[in-house]
Length: 502
Image (cartoon, rainbow, N blue to C red; front, side, top):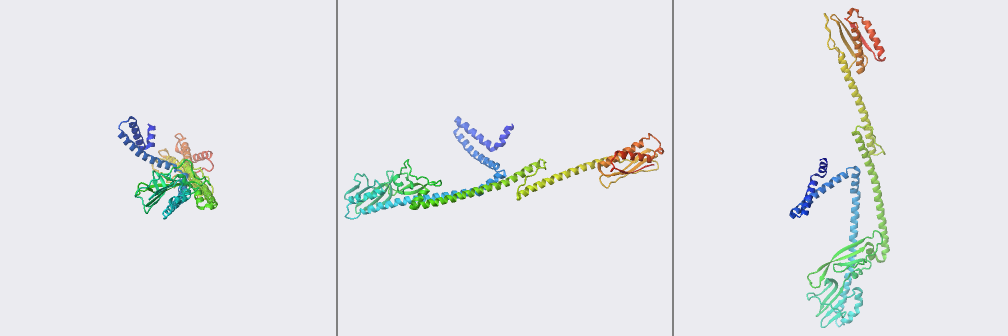
Protein backbone atom coordinates (compact mmCIF):
# COMPACT_ATOMS: atom_id res chain seq x y z
CA UNK A 1 0.00 0.00 0.00
CA UNK A 2 2.83 2.37 0.79
CA UNK A 3 4.39 1.63 -2.61
CA UNK A 4 1.11 2.39 -4.38
CA UNK A 5 0.73 5.62 -2.42
CA UNK A 6 4.28 6.59 -3.34
CA UNK A 7 3.76 6.06 -7.08
CA UNK A 8 0.34 7.75 -6.96
CA UNK A 9 1.96 10.76 -5.36
CA UNK A 10 4.85 10.75 -7.84
CA UNK A 11 2.77 10.30 -10.98
CA UNK A 12 -0.21 12.43 -10.03
CA UNK A 13 -3.65 12.23 -11.58
CA UNK A 14 -2.35 13.22 -15.03
CA UNK A 15 0.35 10.54 -15.12
CA UNK A 16 -2.06 7.84 -13.93
CA UNK A 17 -4.61 8.88 -16.57
CA UNK A 18 -1.91 8.70 -19.26
CA UNK A 19 -0.88 5.19 -18.23
CA UNK A 20 -4.50 4.01 -18.14
CA UNK A 21 -5.23 5.44 -21.60
CA UNK A 22 -2.07 3.94 -23.09
CA UNK A 23 -2.82 0.55 -21.54
CA UNK A 24 -6.35 0.64 -22.97
CA UNK A 25 -5.00 1.64 -26.39
CA UNK A 26 -2.43 -1.17 -26.43
CA UNK A 27 -5.05 -3.67 -25.33
CA UNK A 28 -7.45 -2.63 -28.11
CA UNK A 29 -4.64 -2.43 -30.68
CA UNK A 30 -3.27 -5.89 -29.92
CA UNK A 31 -6.69 -7.51 -29.86
CA UNK A 32 -7.88 -5.65 -32.96
CA UNK A 33 -11.22 -4.84 -31.34
CA UNK A 34 -12.92 -1.45 -31.82
CA UNK A 35 -10.28 0.32 -33.95
CA UNK A 36 -12.22 3.59 -33.72
CA UNK A 37 -12.19 3.45 -29.94
CA UNK A 38 -8.48 2.58 -30.02
CA UNK A 39 -7.82 5.71 -32.10
CA UNK A 40 -9.83 7.77 -29.62
CA UNK A 41 -7.80 6.36 -26.73
CA UNK A 42 -4.58 7.07 -28.64
CA UNK A 43 -5.59 10.70 -29.26
CA UNK A 44 -6.65 11.20 -25.65
CA UNK A 45 -3.45 9.54 -24.44
CA UNK A 46 -1.38 11.85 -26.63
CA UNK A 47 -3.11 14.96 -25.23
CA UNK A 48 -2.85 13.79 -21.62
CA UNK A 49 0.75 12.68 -22.17
CA UNK A 50 1.62 16.11 -23.55
CA UNK A 51 0.18 17.75 -20.44
CA UNK A 52 2.04 15.27 -18.21
CA UNK A 53 5.28 15.95 -20.10
CA UNK A 54 4.88 19.71 -19.62
CA UNK A 55 4.26 19.23 -15.90
CA UNK A 56 7.23 16.90 -15.64
CA UNK A 57 9.45 19.44 -17.36
CA UNK A 58 8.26 22.22 -15.06
CA UNK A 59 8.90 20.07 -12.00
CA UNK A 60 12.32 19.03 -13.28
CA UNK A 61 13.25 22.65 -13.96
CA UNK A 62 12.13 23.71 -10.49
CA UNK A 63 14.20 20.92 -8.95
CA UNK A 64 17.18 21.73 -11.14
CA UNK A 65 17.26 25.42 -10.20
CA UNK A 66 16.43 24.92 -6.52
CA UNK A 67 20.04 25.48 -5.57
CA UNK A 68 21.29 29.05 -5.90
CA UNK A 69 24.29 27.89 -7.91
CA UNK A 70 22.07 26.41 -10.60
CA UNK A 71 19.93 29.55 -10.61
CA UNK A 72 23.01 31.71 -11.13
CA UNK A 73 24.20 29.43 -13.94
CA UNK A 74 20.79 29.67 -15.58
CA UNK A 75 20.79 33.46 -15.16
CA UNK A 76 24.30 33.67 -16.64
CA UNK A 77 23.25 31.56 -19.60
CA UNK A 78 20.21 33.75 -20.20
CA UNK A 79 22.06 37.04 -19.73
CA UNK A 80 25.44 36.31 -21.33
CA UNK A 81 25.54 33.09 -23.33
CA UNK A 82 22.15 33.23 -25.04
CA UNK A 83 22.68 36.77 -26.48
CA UNK A 84 26.14 35.81 -27.71
CA UNK A 85 24.76 32.66 -29.34
CA UNK A 86 21.93 34.66 -30.91
CA UNK A 87 24.37 37.28 -32.23
CA UNK A 88 26.67 34.61 -33.64
CA UNK A 89 23.69 32.83 -35.18
CA UNK A 90 22.45 36.08 -36.72
CA UNK A 91 25.94 36.83 -38.03
CA UNK A 92 26.17 33.33 -39.48
CA UNK A 93 22.77 33.63 -41.15
CA UNK A 94 23.70 37.06 -42.53
CA UNK A 95 27.02 35.73 -43.86
CA UNK A 96 25.24 32.75 -45.39
CA UNK A 97 22.65 34.99 -47.07
CA UNK A 98 25.18 37.52 -48.39
CA UNK A 99 27.69 34.95 -49.65
CA UNK A 100 24.92 32.76 -51.10
CA UNK A 101 23.29 35.66 -52.93
CA UNK A 102 26.65 36.80 -54.26
CA UNK A 103 27.35 33.30 -55.57
CA UNK A 104 23.89 33.04 -57.19
CA UNK A 105 24.24 36.52 -58.65
CA UNK A 106 27.59 35.69 -60.26
CA UNK A 107 26.24 32.47 -61.78
CA UNK A 108 23.02 34.08 -63.00
CA UNK A 109 24.87 37.11 -64.37
CA UNK A 110 27.34 34.93 -66.28
CA UNK A 111 24.51 32.80 -67.66
CA UNK A 112 22.61 35.92 -68.77
CA UNK A 113 25.78 37.30 -70.40
CA UNK A 114 26.23 34.11 -72.41
CA UNK A 115 22.58 34.10 -73.46
CA UNK A 116 23.03 37.72 -74.58
CA UNK A 117 25.98 36.54 -76.67
CA UNK A 118 23.73 33.89 -78.26
CA UNK A 119 21.14 36.54 -79.02
CA UNK A 120 23.80 38.73 -80.67
CA UNK A 121 24.99 35.80 -82.73
CA UNK A 122 21.44 35.17 -83.98
CA UNK A 123 21.07 38.86 -84.85
CA UNK A 124 24.02 38.45 -87.26
CA UNK A 125 21.99 35.92 -89.27
CA UNK A 126 19.41 38.63 -90.04
CA UNK A 127 21.83 40.68 -92.14
CA UNK A 128 20.61 40.71 -95.76
CA UNK A 129 22.70 39.03 -98.40
CA UNK A 130 24.58 36.90 -95.94
CA UNK A 131 25.26 33.19 -96.16
CA UNK A 132 23.72 31.57 -93.04
CA UNK A 133 25.76 28.40 -93.35
CA UNK A 134 29.03 30.26 -93.67
CA UNK A 135 28.12 32.59 -90.79
CA UNK A 136 27.19 29.75 -88.49
CA UNK A 137 30.30 27.82 -89.44
CA UNK A 138 32.41 30.88 -88.65
CA UNK A 139 30.66 31.56 -85.32
CA UNK A 140 30.45 27.93 -84.18
CA UNK A 141 33.87 27.83 -82.43
CA UNK A 142 33.01 30.96 -80.43
CA UNK A 143 29.58 29.66 -79.49
CA UNK A 144 30.92 26.23 -78.53
CA UNK A 145 33.33 27.80 -76.05
CA UNK A 146 30.26 29.02 -74.16
CA UNK A 147 27.61 26.41 -75.08
CA UNK A 148 28.87 23.05 -76.34
CA UNK A 149 26.44 20.91 -78.35
CA UNK A 150 24.33 23.87 -79.50
CA UNK A 151 21.89 23.44 -82.40
CA UNK A 152 20.51 25.92 -84.95
CA UNK A 153 17.40 25.62 -87.13
CA UNK A 154 16.74 28.25 -89.86
CA UNK A 155 13.42 28.02 -91.69
CA UNK A 156 12.42 30.12 -94.65
CA UNK A 157 12.51 29.42 -98.33
CA UNK A 158 15.00 26.75 -97.43
CA UNK A 159 15.76 24.92 -94.19
CA UNK A 160 19.24 25.11 -92.70
CA UNK A 161 20.51 23.09 -89.71
CA UNK A 162 23.66 23.16 -87.67
CA UNK A 163 25.10 20.69 -87.23
CA UNK A 164 23.68 19.09 -90.37
CA UNK A 165 22.62 15.95 -88.48
CA UNK A 166 20.59 17.97 -85.95
CA UNK A 167 17.02 16.83 -85.41
CA UNK A 168 15.90 20.06 -83.75
CA UNK A 169 12.21 20.64 -84.31
CA UNK A 170 10.62 24.10 -84.47
CA UNK A 171 8.69 25.37 -81.46
CA UNK A 172 4.92 25.91 -81.61
CA UNK A 173 3.63 28.74 -83.81
CA UNK A 174 2.61 30.71 -80.71
CA UNK A 175 6.22 31.63 -80.11
CA UNK A 176 7.25 34.90 -81.72
CA UNK A 177 10.50 36.22 -80.27
CA UNK A 178 12.10 34.80 -77.14
CA UNK A 179 15.45 34.26 -75.47
CA UNK A 180 16.54 32.90 -72.14
CA UNK A 181 15.99 29.44 -70.68
CA UNK A 182 13.40 26.96 -71.87
CA UNK A 183 12.27 23.52 -70.71
CA UNK A 184 11.91 20.93 -73.47
CA UNK A 185 11.46 17.19 -72.92
CA UNK A 186 12.16 17.68 -69.21
CA UNK A 187 15.54 19.22 -69.96
CA UNK A 188 16.57 22.84 -69.75
CA UNK A 189 18.12 24.75 -72.66
CA UNK A 190 19.47 28.19 -73.34
CA UNK A 191 17.67 29.39 -76.44
CA UNK A 192 16.99 32.23 -78.83
CA UNK A 193 13.95 32.32 -81.13
CA UNK A 194 13.54 35.04 -83.79
CA UNK A 195 11.07 35.70 -86.63
CA UNK A 196 11.57 38.21 -89.43
CA UNK A 197 10.52 38.49 -93.07
CA UNK A 198 9.03 34.99 -93.23
CA UNK A 199 12.16 33.44 -91.73
CA UNK A 200 12.47 31.72 -88.36
CA UNK A 201 15.69 31.12 -86.44
CA UNK A 202 15.80 28.83 -83.40
CA UNK A 203 19.03 28.25 -81.46
CA UNK A 204 19.16 25.92 -78.46
CA UNK A 205 22.00 24.79 -76.22
CA UNK A 206 21.51 22.20 -73.46
CA UNK A 207 22.47 23.17 -69.93
CA UNK A 208 24.12 20.45 -67.87
CA UNK A 209 25.57 20.29 -64.40
CA UNK A 210 29.06 20.44 -65.85
CA UNK A 211 28.31 23.52 -67.96
CA UNK A 212 26.64 25.37 -65.08
CA UNK A 213 29.53 24.51 -62.76
CA UNK A 214 32.03 25.93 -65.27
CA UNK A 215 30.22 29.27 -65.55
CA UNK A 216 32.33 30.53 -62.61
CA UNK A 217 35.37 28.25 -62.37
CA UNK A 218 36.27 27.19 -58.87
CA UNK A 219 32.99 28.42 -57.37
CA UNK A 220 31.45 25.02 -56.64
CA UNK A 221 28.51 22.88 -57.75
CA UNK A 222 25.68 24.58 -59.68
CA UNK A 223 22.37 22.97 -60.69
CA UNK A 224 18.98 23.95 -62.01
CA UNK A 225 16.73 21.77 -59.90
CA UNK A 226 15.03 19.53 -60.99
CA UNK A 227 16.24 19.59 -64.59
CA UNK A 228 20.00 19.09 -64.30
CA UNK A 229 21.57 15.97 -62.84
CA UNK A 230 24.27 16.30 -60.18
CA UNK A 231 26.87 13.59 -60.67
CA UNK A 232 28.50 11.80 -57.75
CA UNK A 233 31.74 13.72 -58.27
CA UNK A 234 31.58 17.12 -56.64
CA UNK A 235 33.24 20.33 -57.75
CA UNK A 236 33.13 21.89 -54.29
CA UNK A 237 36.55 23.43 -53.56
CA UNK A 238 38.47 22.23 -50.50
CA UNK A 239 38.48 24.15 -47.23
CA UNK A 240 41.01 26.93 -46.83
CA UNK A 241 40.58 27.10 -43.04
CA UNK A 242 38.34 25.56 -40.35
CA UNK A 243 35.81 28.41 -40.72
CA UNK A 244 35.57 27.97 -44.49
CA UNK A 245 32.19 26.26 -44.31
CA UNK A 246 30.01 24.93 -47.10
CA UNK A 247 27.33 27.44 -48.16
CA UNK A 248 24.38 26.09 -50.17
CA UNK A 249 21.96 28.70 -51.54
CA UNK A 250 18.81 28.43 -53.64
CA UNK A 251 17.32 31.05 -55.96
CA UNK A 252 14.01 30.56 -57.85
CA UNK A 253 14.22 31.18 -61.58
CA UNK A 254 11.41 31.34 -64.14
CA UNK A 255 11.83 29.26 -67.31
CA UNK A 256 9.94 29.19 -70.61
CA UNK A 257 7.95 26.08 -71.48
CA UNK A 258 8.61 24.82 -75.02
CA UNK A 259 5.13 23.49 -75.62
CA UNK A 260 3.18 26.14 -73.64
CA UNK A 261 4.35 29.72 -74.19
CA UNK A 262 1.83 31.09 -71.71
CA UNK A 263 2.63 28.59 -68.95
CA UNK A 264 6.15 29.23 -67.64
CA UNK A 265 7.85 26.81 -65.30
CA UNK A 266 9.86 27.40 -62.15
CA UNK A 267 13.27 25.95 -61.46
CA UNK A 268 15.64 26.53 -58.59
CA UNK A 269 19.19 27.66 -59.16
CA UNK A 270 21.18 25.78 -56.50
CA UNK A 271 24.74 26.90 -55.81
CA UNK A 272 26.88 24.91 -53.37
CA UNK A 273 30.04 26.87 -52.63
CA UNK A 274 32.39 28.03 -49.90
CA UNK A 275 33.22 31.39 -48.37
CA UNK A 276 36.75 31.41 -49.78
CA UNK A 277 35.52 30.40 -53.26
CA UNK A 278 33.14 33.38 -53.47
CA UNK A 279 35.84 35.78 -52.24
CA UNK A 280 38.27 34.29 -54.74
CA UNK A 281 35.79 34.72 -57.59
CA UNK A 282 35.09 38.33 -56.59
CA UNK A 283 38.60 39.56 -55.87
CA UNK A 284 40.39 37.42 -58.43
CA UNK A 285 44.08 38.29 -58.17
CA UNK A 286 43.43 39.90 -54.81
CA UNK A 287 42.69 36.55 -53.23
CA UNK A 288 45.80 36.83 -51.09
CA UNK A 289 44.40 40.03 -49.58
CA UNK A 290 41.10 38.24 -48.99
CA UNK A 291 42.92 35.42 -47.21
CA UNK A 292 44.74 38.03 -45.12
CA UNK A 293 41.40 39.61 -44.23
CA UNK A 294 40.03 36.18 -43.37
CA UNK A 295 43.05 35.51 -41.16
CA UNK A 296 42.50 38.84 -39.42
CA UNK A 297 38.85 37.98 -38.93
CA UNK A 298 39.77 34.59 -37.48
CA UNK A 299 42.28 36.26 -35.14
CA UNK A 300 39.68 38.73 -33.89
CA UNK A 301 37.16 35.89 -33.49
CA UNK A 302 39.69 33.89 -31.44
CA UNK A 303 40.38 36.95 -29.28
CA UNK A 304 36.66 37.41 -28.72
CA UNK A 305 36.41 33.74 -27.81
CA UNK A 306 39.26 34.07 -25.31
CA UNK A 307 37.60 37.12 -23.76
CA UNK A 308 34.33 35.20 -23.53
CA UNK A 309 36.09 32.25 -21.90
CA UNK A 310 37.85 34.59 -19.46
CA UNK A 311 34.56 36.27 -18.57
CA UNK A 312 33.03 32.83 -18.12
CA UNK A 313 35.87 31.82 -15.80
CA UNK A 314 35.60 34.95 -13.65
CA UNK A 315 31.82 34.76 -13.70
CA UNK A 316 31.98 31.19 -12.41
CA UNK A 317 34.40 32.26 -9.67
CA UNK A 318 32.15 35.12 -8.60
CA UNK A 319 29.11 32.87 -8.64
CA UNK A 320 30.98 30.31 -6.55
CA UNK A 321 31.72 32.93 -3.90
CA UNK A 322 28.02 33.75 -3.75
CA UNK A 323 26.85 30.14 -3.76
CA UNK A 324 29.44 29.04 -1.19
CA UNK A 325 28.38 31.83 1.17
CA UNK A 326 24.70 30.95 0.75
CA UNK A 327 25.52 27.26 1.21
CA UNK A 328 27.39 28.03 4.44
CA UNK A 329 24.43 30.10 5.66
CA UNK A 330 22.07 27.28 4.76
CA UNK A 331 24.18 24.78 6.67
CA UNK A 332 24.28 27.20 9.59
CA UNK A 333 20.50 27.52 9.64
CA UNK A 334 20.23 23.72 9.69
CA UNK A 335 22.52 23.59 12.74
CA UNK A 336 20.54 26.35 14.45
CA UNK A 337 17.35 24.49 13.62
CA UNK A 338 18.75 21.45 15.43
CA UNK A 339 19.67 23.63 18.43
CA UNK A 340 23.42 23.73 17.75
CA UNK A 341 24.51 27.34 18.33
CA UNK A 342 28.22 26.51 18.34
CA UNK A 343 28.43 26.22 14.54
CA UNK A 344 30.44 29.01 12.92
CA UNK A 345 30.67 29.99 9.26
CA UNK A 346 34.09 30.26 7.67
CA UNK A 347 34.45 33.96 6.73
CA UNK A 348 36.73 34.78 3.77
CA UNK A 349 37.20 38.17 2.17
CA UNK A 350 35.86 41.57 3.12
CA UNK A 351 32.80 41.97 0.93
CA UNK A 352 29.13 42.07 1.84
CA UNK A 353 28.86 38.28 1.79
CA UNK A 354 31.72 38.05 4.29
CA UNK A 355 29.94 40.61 6.48
CA UNK A 356 26.80 38.51 6.23
CA UNK A 357 28.70 35.43 7.42
CA UNK A 358 30.28 37.40 10.26
CA UNK A 359 26.84 38.71 11.25
CA UNK A 360 25.55 35.14 11.33
CA UNK A 361 28.42 34.10 13.60
CA UNK A 362 27.75 37.08 15.89
CA UNK A 363 24.05 36.28 15.93
CA UNK A 364 24.58 32.64 16.89
CA UNK A 365 27.09 33.67 19.56
CA UNK A 366 24.62 36.16 21.04
CA UNK A 367 21.84 33.61 20.86
CA UNK A 368 24.00 31.05 22.65
CA UNK A 369 24.79 33.57 25.38
CA UNK A 370 21.16 34.66 25.70
CA UNK A 371 20.02 31.05 25.91
CA UNK A 372 22.58 30.43 28.67
CA UNK A 373 21.30 33.50 30.53
CA UNK A 374 17.72 32.34 30.01
CA UNK A 375 18.58 28.91 31.36
CA UNK A 376 20.26 30.47 34.39
CA UNK A 377 17.21 32.65 34.99
CA UNK A 378 15.01 29.63 34.65
CA UNK A 379 17.15 27.78 37.18
CA UNK A 380 16.96 30.71 39.58
CA UNK A 381 13.22 30.99 39.16
CA UNK A 382 12.94 27.27 39.86
CA UNK A 383 15.04 27.67 42.99
CA UNK A 384 12.94 30.61 44.11
CA UNK A 385 9.78 28.62 43.58
CA UNK A 386 11.18 25.80 45.70
CA UNK A 387 12.30 28.32 48.32
CA UNK A 388 8.85 29.91 48.38
CA UNK A 389 7.31 26.50 48.87
CA UNK A 390 9.77 25.65 51.67
CA UNK A 391 9.23 29.03 53.30
CA UNK A 392 5.47 28.64 53.11
CA UNK A 393 5.77 25.29 54.85
CA UNK A 394 7.97 26.76 57.64
CA UNK A 395 5.57 29.47 58.72
CA UNK A 396 3.00 28.22 61.25
CA UNK A 397 -0.42 27.65 59.81
CA UNK A 398 -2.19 29.02 62.95
CA UNK A 399 -1.18 30.69 66.19
CA UNK A 400 -1.66 28.67 69.42
CA UNK A 401 -4.52 29.58 71.74
CA UNK A 402 -3.62 30.82 75.26
CA UNK A 403 -5.62 32.12 78.22
CA UNK A 404 -5.39 35.88 78.43
CA UNK A 405 -3.19 36.21 75.26
CA UNK A 406 -4.05 36.41 71.60
CA UNK A 407 -1.22 35.67 69.11
CA UNK A 408 -1.14 36.66 65.45
CA UNK A 409 1.72 36.05 62.98
CA UNK A 410 2.23 37.65 59.57
CA UNK A 411 5.24 37.92 57.24
CA UNK A 412 5.24 40.14 54.12
CA UNK A 413 8.66 39.80 52.44
CA UNK A 414 9.93 42.68 50.30
CA UNK A 415 10.80 40.13 47.61
CA UNK A 416 9.26 36.87 46.54
CA UNK A 417 11.58 34.92 48.85
CA UNK A 418 13.28 36.44 51.87
CA UNK A 419 15.19 35.14 54.88
CA UNK A 420 12.59 36.31 57.41
CA UNK A 421 11.33 33.74 59.89
CA UNK A 422 8.91 33.44 62.77
CA UNK A 423 7.44 30.48 64.63
CA UNK A 424 5.12 29.54 67.51
CA UNK A 425 5.21 26.41 69.61
CA UNK A 426 2.64 25.71 72.31
CA UNK A 427 4.21 24.30 75.48
CA UNK A 428 1.04 24.14 77.58
CA UNK A 429 -2.29 25.86 77.73
CA UNK A 430 -0.63 28.68 79.65
CA UNK A 431 2.86 28.77 78.02
CA UNK A 432 4.11 29.33 74.48
CA UNK A 433 7.53 29.67 72.89
CA UNK A 434 7.98 31.92 69.87
CA UNK A 435 10.91 32.89 67.69
CA UNK A 436 11.66 35.69 65.19
CA UNK A 437 14.68 35.53 62.88
CA UNK A 438 16.30 36.78 59.73
CA UNK A 439 18.52 34.35 57.81
CA UNK A 440 21.32 35.80 55.70
CA UNK A 441 20.85 35.26 51.95
CA UNK A 442 17.98 34.41 49.71
CA UNK A 443 16.72 31.43 47.81
CA UNK A 444 16.96 27.75 48.57
CA UNK A 445 20.04 28.04 50.78
CA UNK A 446 18.32 30.57 53.06
CA UNK A 447 15.15 28.47 53.15
CA UNK A 448 17.12 25.34 54.04
CA UNK A 449 19.00 27.17 56.77
CA UNK A 450 15.69 28.46 58.09
CA UNK A 451 14.32 24.89 58.07
CA UNK A 452 17.40 23.67 59.98
CA UNK A 453 16.96 26.37 62.63
CA UNK A 454 13.28 25.54 63.01
CA UNK A 455 13.97 21.83 63.23
CA UNK A 456 16.69 22.25 65.88
CA UNK A 457 14.56 24.67 67.86
CA UNK A 458 11.52 22.43 67.89
CA UNK A 459 13.66 19.40 68.69
CA UNK A 460 15.15 21.08 71.74
CA UNK A 461 11.75 22.34 72.87
CA UNK A 462 10.20 18.90 72.67
CA UNK A 463 13.22 17.20 74.24
CA UNK A 464 11.97 18.18 77.73
CA UNK A 465 9.55 15.27 77.57
CA UNK A 466 6.76 17.19 79.23
CA UNK A 467 8.89 19.28 81.65
CA UNK A 468 7.34 22.37 83.10
CA UNK A 469 7.89 25.60 81.19
CA UNK A 470 9.67 27.22 84.06
CA UNK A 471 12.34 24.55 83.82
CA UNK A 472 13.14 25.70 80.22
CA UNK A 473 15.95 28.16 79.66
CA UNK A 474 15.77 30.39 76.59
CA UNK A 475 19.47 31.21 76.86
CA UNK A 476 20.48 27.55 77.01
CA UNK A 477 18.27 26.69 74.08
CA UNK A 478 19.62 29.54 71.90
CA UNK A 479 23.20 28.76 72.91
CA UNK A 480 22.78 25.13 71.91
CA UNK A 481 21.13 26.19 68.69
CA UNK A 482 23.98 28.58 67.93
CA UNK A 483 26.59 25.86 68.52
CA UNK A 484 24.83 23.51 66.11
CA UNK A 485 24.49 26.26 63.49
CA UNK A 486 28.14 27.20 63.86
CA UNK A 487 29.30 23.61 63.57
CA UNK A 488 27.20 22.68 60.54
CA UNK A 489 27.27 25.79 58.32
CA UNK A 490 29.87 27.83 56.51
CA UNK A 491 31.13 31.07 58.01
CA UNK A 492 29.15 33.29 55.65
CA UNK A 493 25.91 31.65 56.74
CA UNK A 494 24.36 33.26 59.82
CA UNK A 495 21.00 34.33 61.18
CA UNK A 496 19.72 37.06 63.46
CA UNK A 497 17.55 35.19 65.95
CA UNK A 498 15.19 36.15 68.77
CA UNK A 499 13.64 33.52 71.06
CA UNK A 500 11.25 34.01 73.95
CA UNK A 501 9.08 32.01 76.35
CA UNK A 502 5.78 33.23 77.59
